[in-house]
Image (cartoon, rainbow, N blue to C red; front, side):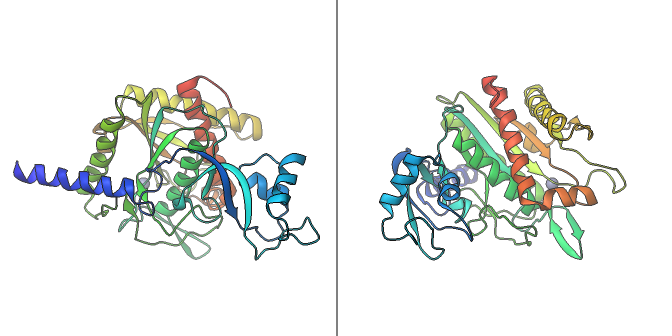
Length: 339
Ligand SMILES: [Zn+2]
């Protein structure tokens, strides 16, 4: 009894620590959005329009003029960006260091999901890289692909006003526009709690972290949902294509999965009409689905050992697209709106 009380006190202290320490749990500490300027460095070959758009500012004659006025003297020939200069961009954005240098500015584009709370989990992490695949002689770990997609999803949700908790965090891996994401083992849970190798203990900790936050949000949240992302090896390598599958443990999970599934299906029908989509929704009695208080679903983004899926998931733009589709499904689930 005493032991229980102690460990939950510790957890609470860790959570508090996480909530107030910006570099450990920046997403949990969502400051109010302010109209201000943010600092942005141009990418190679980037122009003002692209820089503005990437920073969440709609490029227009006015916003470009405002940008030029703010950065007088820093532009080459009055309109060209210099790579080695940091520019000020007028923005309605919050800064989330967890998303990394190129993506840390998170513009608020709408309040569609205001009041809705999401727990985004990149599967595995810490000492457990998940399932490993091999591509052109390189090891590709499940947890890094899942984590990169999870961060992209978290950022997309924040941009439409959601409250987002990123449950697995790696403070030196932001959103990465890279093909190969090397294995590392320094991911921790939100709040800094260590991810241990023992699976039962690990899932218990994850469940505790989520349930604690759920209780804090319960009175004010319009909805609370857990989205856990994986890239396992559930089928075998000779399937012609592998799809985005869903694993659920409850009726509310099945309904949520159904909405996201039909969104993904509609996207494939539109963008790749000859492809067809066979994503399945499977019922499974998993601890993460059963014992977390919010509605929880697990999404299999693909098969890490399948050649076609490796192609698909190694491309950063595809991870981004998947994150956006899942976000659209989540918006439809709670608002009934298409965006
Ligand atoms: Zn997995």
